[in-house]
Amino acid sequence: MSIDVLLTGFAPFDGADVNESWLAVREAAPALRAAEITTRELELPVEFGRAGAELLHAAREHAPQLIVAVGLAAGRRAVTPERVAINIRDARIPDAAGASPVDEPVVPGGPVGYFSTLPIKAMTEALATQGLPAAVSQSAGTYVCNDVFYLLAHALATDPQLAQARGGFVHVPAADVAPPAAVARGLVAAIRTALESPEDLVVTGGAEH
Image 1 (cartoon, helix red, strand yellow):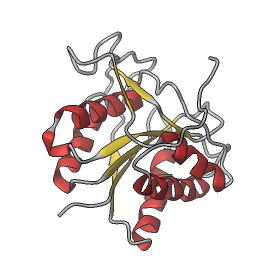
Image 2 (spheres, helix red, strand yellow):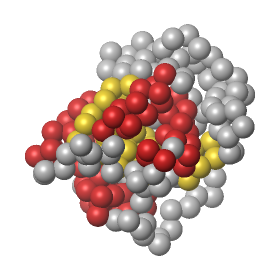
Image 3 (tube, one colour):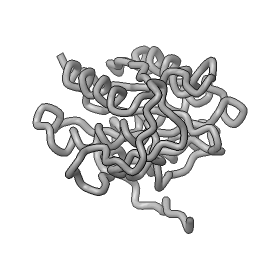
Image 4 (tube, helix red, strand yellow):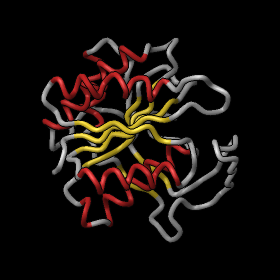
């Protein structure tokens, strides 16, 4: 039986006790279910390759309409739906398994990048309606968040089993910028908007740098 939404966050890493992405996802999922949006939540390890594999296993098992992966970007000052995933692994710090790939492809021979298939501008506006700082992001980095995003986007583009799904990535800031409870409310609004919006808004979301 298919579901409406697969929603993922990450486990703590780099010595942290919590990961705000998972705190927000854990609170958003029951709120979505309360709104009669069938939802599965999944906590991913901060590990190259493994995190994306676990997400895709869940996606193939549950056949969601929408897949939204959420990760922490501690230095950002807004909740940021990501525009593009790129085919590179370049780790500034080791992942949770100790891997530190440098200039390796996520998928050997895969395209340079993929655009999100989520309505990122409509989602950004929905986040802002909840009083959250929000903006479209042009880069998901080169760490595990981008790795998951690229593996998801590649599967959506190449796997007939996932042909009906749309998906992408949202970065959330640390709790001192936006508390996880507030981010959860924003995710609920953004996901509801995505489910209702087969096409994105034609509004600016660009950046000069």
